[in-house]
Amino acid sequence: MITMATDLGKGPASYSKCMIRQGSDLCYARCNLRGGVDDATNQAPEVASFHQPSNLNEEHGNRMNERAGSFQGSYSEAPILMDVQTPLRVLGPADFADHLRNRYPSLVRDELTLMLKEQNAKCQREINNARVNIQADMIKFIDKLMTSLSSRCICCSARGFTDCPARAVAIDTSPADTMTTLAGPKMPGVRLDMSACKGDMSATRVVSEVLPDQQQAKRPRHDDDLLETLKEGILQFARHTMQEISERFIDLPNDGSTTIFGEKTVGLPGRKYVHQPGFQTDPWIRGVVPCPPHPYVSQLLEEYFATAEPEDLSRNYLVHENPRFIRITGLALKQQLVGDVLIDHEMMSVIIRRYCQADQEADKHSPYLTWRHPLEPEFSSLVLSEQDYLHTMSIQKALGAMVLQYDITSAQLLFTPVPRPEGWIVIFWDMVACVIHVIDPMYSKNSQPLITEPRDEIIAWKLHDALFKCFHEYYAGWPVKKDGWKMNFLALADSIFTRNESGACVIHITRHFNEKKLKIPLTKAIAECLITHHRIQEFKVQIV
Image (cartoon, rainbow, N blue to C red):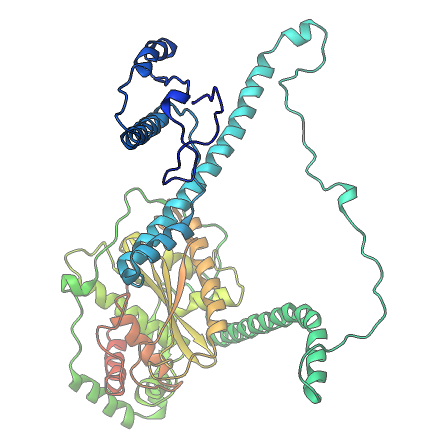
């Protein structure tokens, strides 16, 4: 700091805009800020005895050099003594993006720039989350600390106080009365159309602005009505199927000699404990896929049914009793396997049983394990008709551990064919991926989206709940949970099939679906061979 002692008027002019005085006219002392006051006093004689210039110009030049040197020295030393630093402006992701755009304009659209912006945004998000979590932890910590202090406090009670200052006070989170404003009556008036349209368009706009609240009030009611209509249609069709099958076996005695359709039992089977669950690999990897039958056998059967007498066809050709009693007449075989009639409930059950036996025959190396487990159509009919399926003997035999010859917990894939008015569908449960596959053979890769998808979804979720209820009652520690499943509607057919062909296509899908696709595609040429295979497998069913 320079202290002016005297004012002797104007000094000599120079290139600068300020008045510069001669050194002999000033009385000052330069202080060394590092050394303190003592160093400043020691430098005073040195300042008084500096070199005298020979002329005015030399004097003026030396004086300017001294001033510049002293200014540079004081400027370089000043930041060392600054204790308080100026805070930086708060920066954000927008500043980071502006910096990239201004400094590197040619890389604005580059992938590296986008990655940097994304990483910067993630860092900012983590910082904000960390700040919020720290504050939340501090709030919890202060409550925990004060609770500990108030619980151990004895000084307040010793002094006669009823409450402790460290004890928390309940905070009323309800809104205050002063913060609420009662809604007043509506003001009479006419809504004005502020749009630029004229004529009929203005009237239409006013009507559309008045109706949304009414439409929103009606929309949930419409959805509920549609849902109830779909559920009622599913229930009526399932009960009609149950009534039709029950009438077929009305002549059978209910004496316990065999298990008839819908027969109930009082108790439930003992639960099996699942200790070390594991899944079997698919038959294509292990090479245990059953071989197809010989085609000449199918030709002989077709010729026989074509020339058989009606009296001969009226008798029972197939009778099977496990897991429940089924009988098939020759006329049903001729109509459904030789003709073009839709495969019915009982025929589908017999074919499913036979193919399950074929899988066990082919897999001789691990007969106590299985990759896929079938559920006959009776399961879906009982569940959808809201019958007591848990106490049904055939369901207990199909899912219980006491009757099955293999461990059902090793199955990766469970499936069941489901009859509908439009034809058959098949539902798969992938126990590894927790995905429900709903496959309609009439939904091909080239067809329009399904119009029955909402109803099929209701059916699938209802069967899913019933299946895991059976697992919960029949097993302890089932390896797969009921929740967290997804549903998938697959289009696997390469051709468009009719309703009467849906039964044979469903059986083909159950045989060649590997959780992702069909090992053998479903085409019209393949469909002509399906009935041939089913016809031969019908007569190979074994009594087990």
